[in-house]
Image (cartoon, one colour):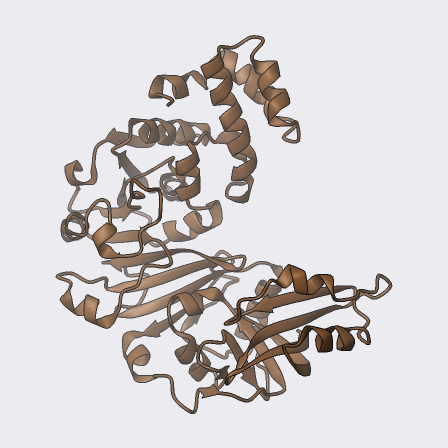
Length: 430
């Protein structure tokens, strides 16, 4: 178990000499690194540097310059990635004071401070406090950090709060209010003593209407943030004016294909309730008012058991927010059965959160029949996706032939239509 003293040693000249050399070549095996370090360092020092070397590689998916960061394994796992943290920091007005409670290794504090906002960070872990302070200085930012539990924090009533509750002792991310740490009661009290608050939660947290009705202070709005095919986090808001009251907002980080779809979407002016991604830092946002969510239930006009000419896979944030019928209804699409996770339509309409495919063949889920059909398809690669069916996709892929001279990719969507398991062979269209 490493201490704050151990982590403070990481910035010593001795440690930095090794660290800079290690960081230049992240492909060196950990066993080789450890053997080299043990010649000049104690075993605890070598072990700590080795841990940071392993976390350096793991953190590349979250931060642009991983050599500037130090972590613990748990804090890296819990941390927001840089793009998501930067987007969430936009929730606070530029002249605000923000208290970042349960600051972890400082990813959100640093993203907020980069906007020129005054940040006061706190955590009950002395190691987390040290890492936040240290990582901020590494980014040429000076953040005030205090070791304190959420209940002990002194909140400026004219300021805002960002809070990222801890994991439970078993290491799992909570998915109900009873498991919050700090407790829901503590979170509620904090929300009453500030101008506004952003509460970061796991995407799997559910707030149904009955639970919301029993809460003393339910969130005024909710947001799901999605990036590269996964929902990164859910946020509950109080007093944050950026999003409509009594709404659920879906926010998508735009990679290149999604960005082009977003530009096309806005050029056609298809929606008035979404923000132009060109003007809003490469994110697309779409909001659903609570009244709209309540009125548009799953009905015969939305759910069908028949496949149309086009089929679409849509962003997981829609499913996480349980807004599939509302999303389909808004644009005149239909859901291919209530739990398939796919949209179908006779006509396609470009949307940033949707990948459209033209149906080539609708086959029963029979491997021999699928393999026989695939022999007549010239494709360089197969993209396989499954929703509503438990299937070993890699095992299926092994039976599908490829043609290296081809430049096309063929997609197979496995799903249920009615009670039948189907393999829908299709190709993506722009």
